[in-house]
Image (cartoon, rainbow, N blue to C red; front, side, top):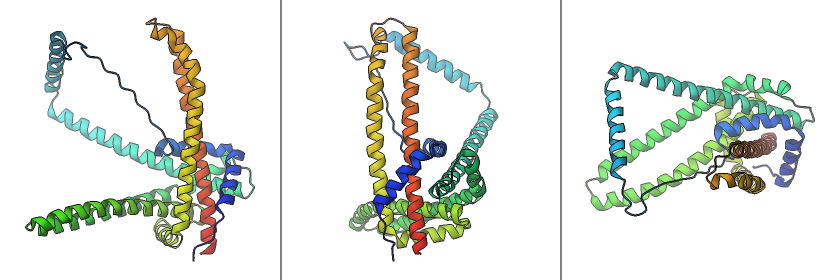
Length: 322
């Protein structure tokens, strides 16, 4: 039977923990930066063209051709074994980058989960007395991520094999093949969404089982799945609340920060619009951009800590009920 949860008290408690324990925001910033949670993106596009004909001038075409020929000639001078070594080196760098990312995220998550548990008990938390939670659970959390990745890969391969076999059989019957393609597309999309939700729910509980209850990675995975199945509605509701609060707070604060910084940015940009190169304006705009990025990053970090605190409390309630 699922535990009865007062979501209002959970959110209130998390808000208090977030603002009283700002050292934990460091871990939140690491998680937010490396996972992209709570992030935002923007892009600007600029293009120039001949407004009369819309065609590239002959001079520009000639320059592009010459540059392309020079690049092609340079590439041709590089021996094949150099490209192979370059590819191997690039692959090694990518693998090392993934490993470093996994290690850093696992450490930050473990330290944040353990630190919030200490803060909830009324203990004073700092980076010094919380980082050991991340170090202690680092290996187990990495193994848990590997298990999850293997399960995901195995599930996808199995589904693709089934899809391929059914498609092969039905390829001789055109009407059934069309029906199968439509149904498998819809069911596949729905199944993918459910699969990702289940994986996220398992990770929420399993990570806390590893950090707070010292479970082994595989036992944490199985127990996390069992807790998710028994508390599906509570988990979904908490997830929706986290998403709603995160979206609301993130959008509002980002709008406020942008509005506040827009006024000095416009003032600094006036000389640039007048086509005057004014270096103090450029330096000032870069500084404002850094302030904007820093402020938004801090908001994202706080939201990560808030979400983790909510999940810590939900975990304790459902685990005690189990």
